[in-house]
Amino acid sequence: MKTNSKLLIAFALLSFSLACNKSKTSTNSCAQTACTMEFRMIQVQVEDALGNAVVLDSLRVLDPSNKVLHVQTSYQIPHEKSYTLIDDTHFSKIEKFKNTIITAQFFKGASILKEQKYTVSADCCHIQLVDGPSKVILP
Image (tube, rainbow, N blue to C red; front, side):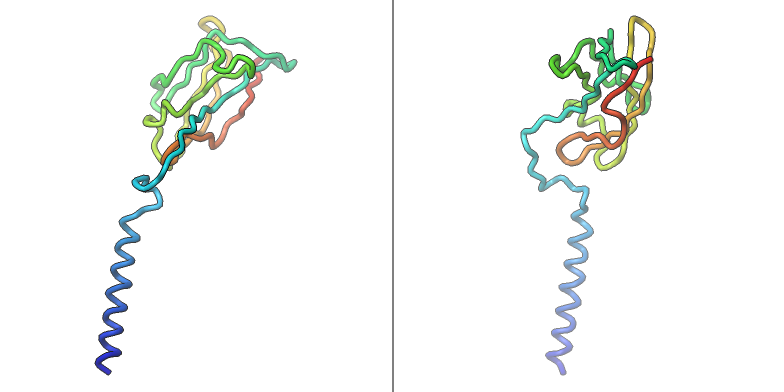
């Protein structure tokens, strides 16, 4: 009987020990994550109602508190005729594992042609698009 009691106590201690270790290592912990050298960008194409690419004077992207994340005045990737909403250089400004709403403002001159909300997030290594169109149609 004593060996069964000792075995039961040892098993209980081992179980509690493992349970404590699991609570310390959250799924949101990035301490042991190996990130790739990949550089991610969330791109948007801007078109008119006929499907023609629209060249903006600028694209301004705001964080949730309406602070400017960045301003872009030309295509990031000319042959794709797309603008960058956000990329991994803004990684530190996006809270990990939580959705963040950013606002894209599409400008011609000093006029905002359109504002579009996007939901983005970040994992341990990169930003990612959660919600929002990859193509914006301007009036």
